Image (cartoon, rainbow, N blue to C red; front, side, top):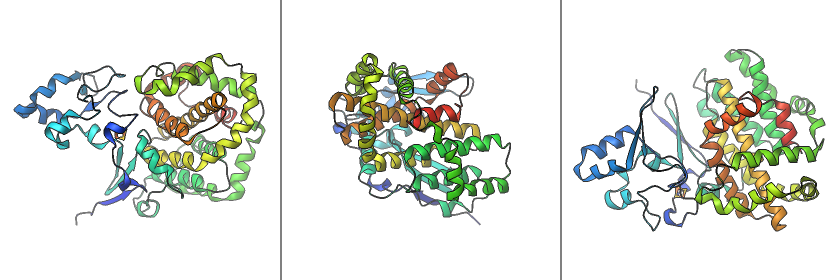
Length: 380
Ligand code: SF4
């Protein structure tokens, strides 16, 4: 008997609508745009579309051949017109768009006969949808996917989601607890499926969670100045290559300059007030993290899963620091700043994860950073 495909969607999925020329972070600029082979062949086979091939470059590699739109990574797509609209859509309709362009910001994950549809926070309209949600983001998946046997990664993701659904734990502690959980699994050497379920069940117990978090309580306010220094230099190193990307320039210019010139002791004076004010955005930021966990944390490889989650933590730290620098300059926080930095760091980290992993390798000689280091940057 044929299996019926079950389609699950993240909350708010059907509300998404691209605002095209009105978008200040258009996805047609600032990164490489892939042309999938099917689309490439459609362009090649139709006489009236042949001219589009002049805009494609071919990259041959030992793993797979890739077609990309011919442009510098930072530059805008040559097919975007001066009104910010796509010439392919105008002249031929969106069925001739490459899959990347047609799908973004939609993300599809397939598990056996279940298709999950989620949205990427790299799109400002998605962040707007999330910011209008009063309740937690969810995908109707936990029960529906439990019948797919042996998919340990979905069980791990379910535990991560459960941690982020909890009401009485701060975001920082949720990040630490989740990272600690993944790290402990790595050290538990090849858990079989039954042992994995048993291990993950621990994280449903309030008592167990309290004990785990107690291990890290000494990091709270331990040396905020040192931690701020470390985050500030991490921030400068990471955005160095992106601060001149045209669509990010405006948002990064003043905070980059400020981060380079500021005396950290002065920054420290603002930290406590900022930290209290920033809590106002907990719901928005937690929902963006949840949305990323649902879209990204689906790897069968535990090390890969840890790196994926590490990227989420890094994004959080950079967003928090960017909003903090803005607060130091303007003496206030605006929801728009928070939303803009969510989009920007989602693109810088999420879409350039290979470059970020290389950066971590250079700095720490490992792609996976120790829990203690994560605590020292997060629990300040
Ligand atoms: S980033 Fe989102 S809203 Fe902006 S152009 Fe792309 S899909 Fe549309």
